[in-house]
Image 1: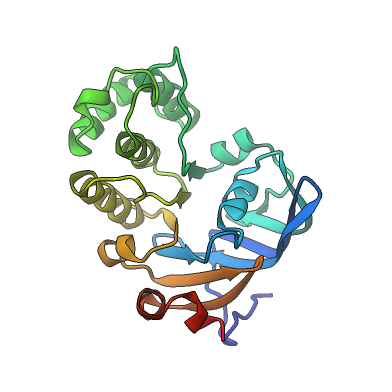
Image 2: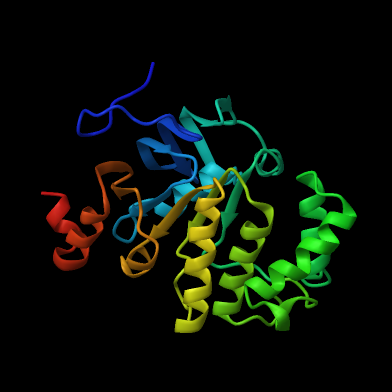
Length: 252
């Protein structure tokens, strides 16, 4: 049976859905019954004050072992992935762009993406054609043959994360603060890549404190997370209210 959102409306048919999701970290409850539904081909925003559980939700969805699901379910394209390991979630089309992407010494970005694309069914010859096109399209020329994130600036790491998602075209892309530490030029590239991902059918969730990125990538739905629960849902106007009045305005 389809569920109702906080306003009593039916949730849309979702490509990714959480059902009464509870998550603990080191024995401490962080998420307390999160209900979320992401639509195919739409941009969504998850907003909330510091410490509200936004990054915890992203890591739990991606399957990080330190983020223990104590109750509830995660469904991806109708399949229960609650207890699948991270690699199996990724192979099924779930992508997480990190807030702080790690450096991976000894692994070239090209080889990393060749293996990832192979797992998604792209043959070697297809990859050889796709990779340079993607590099040029997302202005990644200076990073194309370097080790993954090694020596990259903060903005370059964020561009590399969006580059990976753009090339892989996952079912769901979770983007944890894709605009933080990014200059104006890189931000324009990132915003364009997000819009193109959604246009190609990916369900995008932008996790952010600030509505700046949402001015360039308008969301179909905004979720406000506070004290481990979704406390408000709405359209782009909800993000504008938060920008003007802060989170207290949507929690009273």
